[in-house]
Every structure is written in C-alpha cells, then in structure tokens.
Image (cartoon, rainbow, N blue to C red; front, side, top):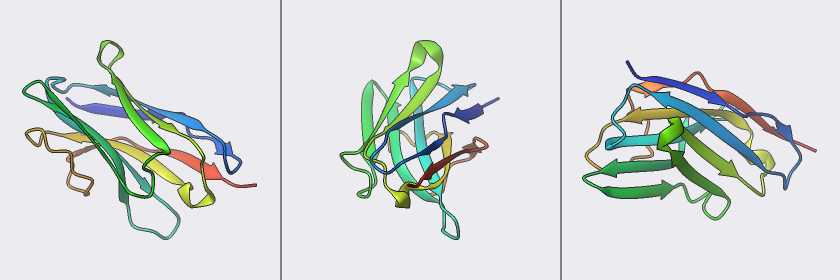
Length: 126
C-alpha cells in the first residue's frame, strides 16, 4: 500500500528557504513518478516539480514559476523525497502535497496521480 507523509512546512519571510520532505513507502523505486503539488488560498492545485525513474533513466520536471529556486531530490535508502525551496516569495504560500503514480518514465505536473499525501502548509510573509 502506497503511503505518503509530508513534513517541513513552516512560516518564513520572503527570500527565505525551506526543505519539505515526503516519506514515501509502498511503491516501486525502479519505476515511479513522484511529484510535488501546491494549492494556494482560492487557487487550483498546481504541479510544482516531479522526479521519475524508469528503465534506469531519471527525469526531472519543474514548473516555470519555480525553476531555479526549487530542487527536487530523492533518498531511496531512506524512502524520502525532498523539495528544497529557496528565494521564497509570498505567492509560494500554499499547502504542498506529494503524489505518486507510474507513468513509464513520464513526469507529469498535472493532477492525474492516484496517491496523495495529506499536505504541509508553507506560508511566506513578512
């Protein structure tokens, strides 16, 4: 059974950094896609970043709004997925979710994943 548990959300000032973590268990680390999504107040859920692995090939994908500021990484030994966020802006304020599924190596940033965590709140404010 796939389980995803996010942590690391906090309140930070603009320009600050945070690292979110997603404890991910119950899926195949040789064939997966794990994505980070966020949903701000009054907004639709949007894809932020994704990492996938299939047939020995690793793929990364980032939304334009976070390129150069956010970095996704994995630690298979610890069953963890991380989202390092730097130069945070007020518009990054949202509940952040990790999600996983299998897409044959593709790394979509669309809300098509079957398995989701419960989310962690990130607030960027001065």
